[in-house]
Length: 401
Image (cartoon, rainbow, N blue to C red):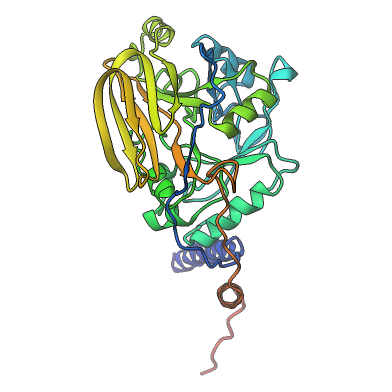
C-alpha cells in the first residue's frame, strides 16, 4: 500500500514537473519596449463609411464558426455542410469556418471560400482569427502573462496573413487596460463576444491610439443550439460574398455589427421570424465634422469616445453630432426595444496627408537585455525541472547501517 501511494505521488509530481517544463518551452518570447499610448489627433476625420452607397444592400456575416472536423479536436457536433445550412436559414449571406489551427473548406462553393483559422492553444484563451494565411503557424504561448508575448504573436501571425483579428478580449484572462493600451498590429477586434455591450476593451485600445474595426461573431460551437447561433453578426456593404469583396470591406470598415437576442428561446419559428425582421442602418457617414446615422427603427443611440466616455445620448431613429477638434474619436451604439444592439465602426481623427487611415502599428523595438534575461531565466528553470524529473525517477541508493 505504501509503495503504491509513493508511486502515485511520484507520478503526480512528474506530471506537474513536465507541465511546468512545457510551459517554459512555450513561453519563449522577445521583450519589447512599447511606445507610450497616444490619442488620435489630426485635422481630418476618418470615415469608415465613405464608400457606402446611397441605398446600401447589407449582407449578414459571421466569421467565427466551428464545425466538426476529421481529427481528434472536435469543437462542434456537425460537419460544415450542416452548419452552413443552419446559418443560411437564419438569413446569413457570408459564413467562414474558423476551426482551431486548421483551414476548413467550403462545403459547396469554392468561390465563397474564406481561408481563416483560429490560432491559439493558450490557457488564457488569447485567440486570434488569421485571414488568408500563406502558411499555418502553430507556436503559441500557453500562459501569455506578458504584453510582449501577446504582441509577438500578433506580429508572428500578421507576417504571413492578410490581417489578424483579436478575438474576444472580454473573455481572455489577464487582459488588463494596460495590455490593451500597448498591443497593436490587429486590424479588427471581437469587441462584443456576448459578455457585455459596453465594449470597454475596445475603448481602452482606441483611447491609446490603436485603431481597429469592431467585428461581432457567434463563435458558435453548436449550430443546432438555439442559444448559440444567430446571436451576433456583422452587416457588410459588399457587392458579393467573395473573399476579395469581403476583405476590402473589413479593412475599410464599411460595415456595422449587431447583437441579437435568442428570439423565441427555443421556438425556432419565432427565431426565424425575429431574424427576418431585424432593424438596420439606413445611412451613416460624415458631413464635414458631423457624424450622422439614420436607422430603420427608433432606438436609444449612444455616442462613445475617448476614455470610454459617453459623449451624447438621443432617442429616435436619427443621430447627428459634431466631433469636436479636441475629441479623438466617436463610435455609436443603438439599443432597440426588441433587444437588438447595433455598434458602428469608429470615426477617428488623423492626418490624411501622412496616412491613409488612423491604423498604424505602434513601434515596439526589442529590449535585448530584458529579452536575454527573460529567456535565460526560462532556460534555467527548465534545467532545474529536468534535474527534478531525473531525481524523481533515478534509483535511490540504500544507506548501509
